[in-house]
Length: 114
Image (tube, rainbow, N blue to C red; front, top):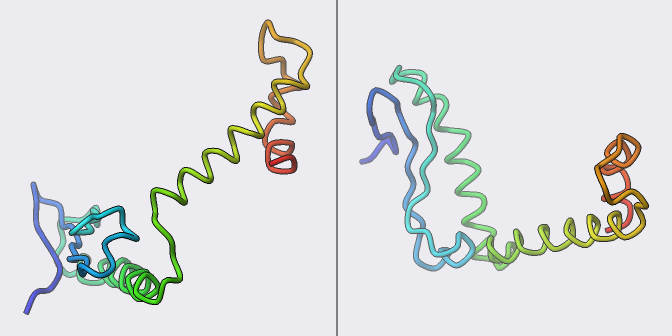
């Protein structure tokens, strides 16, 4: 039985195979890996639990159709923020440089207008 740990260059990684029926939600990825940023095996066993729980929950959601395609979700977020930036650029009068007033209000307005 596997313990889901891989040791590479002195650092442990957690590794989980993605079942074929859930791969679409993970952009076709067959394997999920994450550095645990430790070379201590005992710590790695503890740290891996968080990632395994999260990934297995996401796999179950994908199987039930509760999560969409990861790539599509990212594209939607990027498009939303691009629309907000375009709006701010069209309403900002100073095209020569990003003045401090514009930069300060960017995050709040970007989220409010998107």
